[in-house]
Length: 365
Image (tube, rainbow, N blue to C red):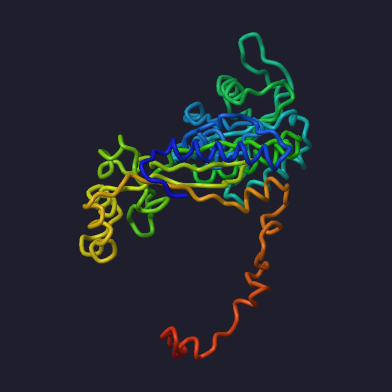
């Protein structure tokens, strides 16, 4: 869908109305909330550790980085000193999990880069002063934490007697995905995730750029034609990491089912974007000169969104995999059984496309 003379709110309103009517027509499941909740990318990452949150259940993540910055527990202190964060998630009524079950949770987060989990089981109540005596806690790390630190962690997690607090201390790129997936696992184990709800939400204000350390330059997260927010153009050159995009994703039950943005329609802004991405004037002229010239004649403000129809159908149909609703899904090895592709190409076809195939010479041993 592409539209002219629109803002993000116009496109979001149109898609939202369509999805509400579509849900009522083809699904017996109620929509959890209308209007759809809208959260910023930063809020989604802070509360859910992921930019496509499943909001059918709670268990929002919490952060205690500042609280444990000077902790005597080396795992926390060292992670924060290295620029990392300390965040956690609650396992409701998990304080009595066996050590084997807790070890299983630790192994669960390791594929996401986490080295382990720190954990505190709340087996009793707080004392009159708000702190927790040792007999009210079950944890191998409480001997390294002060009473105020423990009380602060319990408060931040909103834990109650019988709950298990699980914490990860690492760089943000490890901590968030580890806890995001652990949250989903806990939700599934504790039957908190309803299969009878359609929980839509919008995620907006994505970062416009990200820094590529390997190439030592800034790159566009969506594409180089996505517009910055109006108020952020003034900081594009000096503070690129803080620039937010006019981009928006629609999420359903933890699946991204659509995404789009408002595009740049001014030649001066598009040129600044290309320069911020490290393109020279000659590269811009060669690759995008026609676009910049067209913009000079006056292009309408425009934007759009692309919907993942197969994902929507899969969710409405309770399919276990998107492949179940695809007309001609590829096999696990990437082959197309209908078209028998990939397959050998005839010499005549290569000649027609002016493609020459040359065998690579073996390097001398």
